[in-house]
Image (cartoon, rainbow, N blue to C red; front, top):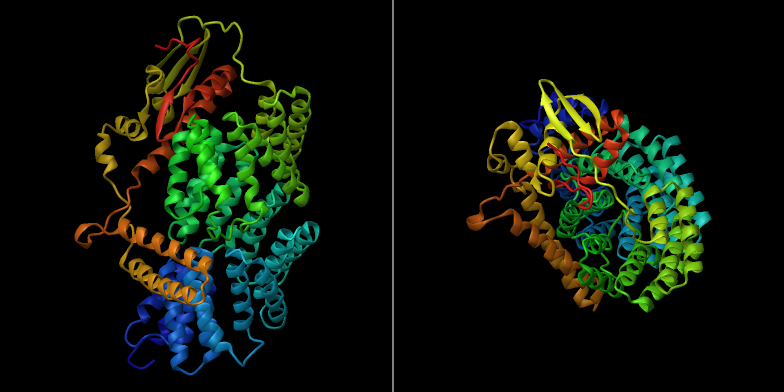
Length: 640
């Protein structure tokens, strides 16, 4: 490396990578990658450690440079391998299909007349997923076996991921048991074959996503636990954040929504450096969790952010609007989603098939029944029953039974409703989903208020005495140590019904005005490297649109055009007038998480001493961007 990168530093970088010190390896190789640039073999290592260190744009850019260097060196297979890596990262982390197709075309041309190499195996893997995410299951079905066949001879990691893709296709075809067996086999193989960290994590994540999409929650939980054990010391790049999302999904299902929200918020923070459109996945899970907690404003904020990222946030947004009483927009959104599926590519969700429609159909029944449109609800419930019969998971059957029960109830068939909703409650209980089981029982019971509510005696109070708080509730006294959560709680109890922005609560505690805290930021929305990458992606998308138009492929052209609009929106949001960078405000979200956690901990501590007090506060304290104490207006406690 005459005149360029010192060999000693490169050796140190290799040693750092070998022990998993990705940041050190990245810094050393970045320092060496100056004038002259690193040779293509070292560029490949730089790309790998950049990804592990959280530098996705540098990773992709470096694989692009490696591709060009291998082309110039007359090594077509190696150049194709680098092109496939660009396509793989674009697919898994950005879900932008047009650039993926462009890089796969480059690889395909370079691989003509050759065969049997890892580049061929990985090409088959990425092509399988590109077709699957684009809704072309038939072509994906042809490519997955090639990935397994070629990978089995030369690259076990490609074979394992190809096997997961095969399993997902079998499930989509209705061969559920065969697909589930193949998923388990792929998961075991990933561990036993000692694959590299990234490939092992992808297998785990893909496996759990497939099970979640099928609503096989017990199996998903088991594999999530296995992924968590593995990720504790092995996860690189986005894999730990992805694991958090899966954990949040399971925690929400099991009813532990406070813990789930903590995991989902942490996942969003960890995944922001990696994901583009796919960031909608953890944001949507965050929205679901908040809706289950009754934090409708917080749920809507998360889901709108997911929508802004280019994700399809339905049916979750419609369900939030329904809970807010905004029936017309909820009904319109669901009708549009069912009649004109968005087709937004997602590695985490099933492609646009019956499985993708199942949550939309369940929400459609809820909204149509609320709107008094029984025929519309009946059609959706019948289709959902067909999906449940084909895929045979207990959770899908429970969802279908719940929908059937709501239709019976709306039609005045009390006996039919009792049977169907009872079955739904039983199945949800077996699945271990208390929230959904409670919804089924609540629907059967019907809306009702407690009869003869008795007003509490006067004298409920909360006051601070040095390092302790004394709380009197229904004549009982509790003393707990002073915490931030107790101070927030006292302020809410003092003014029932008033909404406090979390920045006001935090600012009041610290003695600082909220506006000063709201002005903090997390730096530029996009750095120069990211903006340059976005512009390269735009050029690739334009090429894809031209090719799609030349072949009269209207679906592909529409998908590419939507991706172009998404990237242009991102660039416009990141760059203001005169080309100045806009910064990302993060104070509000940090305050929300901190205030929510502090309040929940305070309520839990009070509940340990007085369960009735804890239950009352758990029902009446609303958390989110705006927090409030909302007691029953028929029997409000009188706090002093």
